[in-house]
Amino acid sequence: MKYVIILGDGMADEPIRVLGGKTPLEYAKTPSMDRLAKMSRIGMVHTIPEGMQPGSDTANLSVLGYDPKKYYTGRSPLEALSIGVPMEATDIALRANLVTLTKGEKNYEDRRITDHSSGEISTEDAAVLLDAVKEVLEDDIYKFYVGTSYRHLTIWKNGRTVPLEAPHDHLGQVIGPYLPQEKKLYEMMKKSYDILVDHPINIEREKKGLNPANSLWFWGAGTRPALTSFEKKTGKRGVMISAVDLLKGIAVGASMKNITVAGANGGLHTNYQGKGQAAVKALVEEDYDFAYIHIEAPDEMGHQGSLEHKIQAIEAIDHFVVQTVVKGLEAANEDYRLLILPDHPTPIRLRTHTGDPVPFMLYDSRAPRQECWQYNEREAQLSQDYVEAGHKLIDILLEI
Image 1 (cartoon, rainbow, N blue to C red):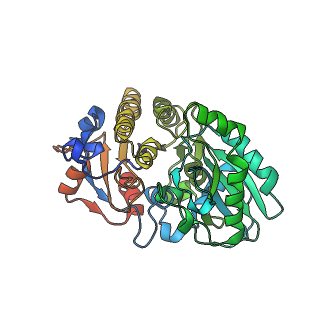
Image 2 (image 1 turned 180 degrees about the vertical axis):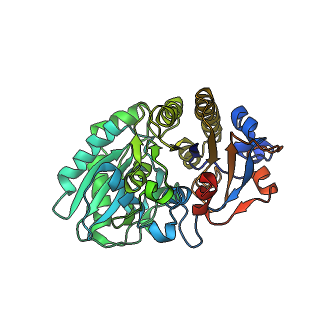
Image 3 (image 1 turned 45 degrees about the vertical axis):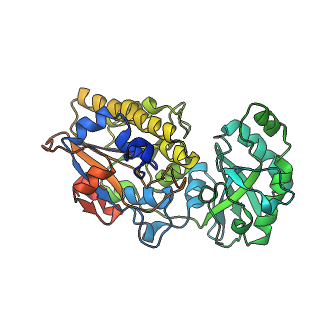
């Protein structure tokens, strides 16, 4: 038996008037998921424990079967695992986003954050910008490490876990009220703007109509994590297929194999089909038991407030990921159980995450159910099938 999770990050949403009251998932053309839904268990699952911030960190830990209330120590430490950054017990990891701030205001505090991803800047360009920051700001206490695209890392030696705001929670807002209270972090963010605003890469980006990456933004502070091995916990050998450091870091912590797919970049134009093919290869040719396929695109489009592109991402997941996995496993005559779900909603209206329950679909190739469901938020709610503790959903998938 093979087990697969296909996770469309931030795929869930709210009914939208211009879609006739449908959600993007309900509106999108998803023939592969529609076919499976008619033979699947459909329901809702609460992936974010009460009292915890809704994010891909807590939610994906939940989906993988790790109770965030027990295992979560912060987002950035998980990304540090992915990058291979050594952390001492007294170190604090911080996410260091490269973001886009407005330029017309005199004071840094009066600027607005317009893009948390700097137009999905390439890792190559971001690395050059981070080098410019490191030359001025790095010392024995603060070290900077290149991640992927706009997502980078700072290690604060002998630091403290301090409250910090996620940039995607405050898009379009004046940044003053959301800047760090920790003086040194605030000063480094402010100084980074002076370093980056007229950097040649940003000047060239603006000439091309692209958003400049003109400031650091610190958030997601935490201490070194300690996850139980996924194989020890479940008895299954697993692989992780994702373009983002957070998920790769969770995999490192869980002793799962990370598979890198060429062209997978965490954006709208990622290599969807390559991810599906990598999962099939790992399960069929390399005899792994479990594959976790994470696709970031719906979440990024939700943060950008792009309804058209969010629908496009969902349709690409259906056509290039779901279809590829199903056809590949069926061609190999493999019995399999397939779970499809988002980690959390990222509503277009809000452009940030919420902690609301999300729809899941569980298909078993051995014993297809005779149902009439479609896979979307509305139908999943109507099913009245509800899993309260998100970290227990994987036990249902794996029949533990």
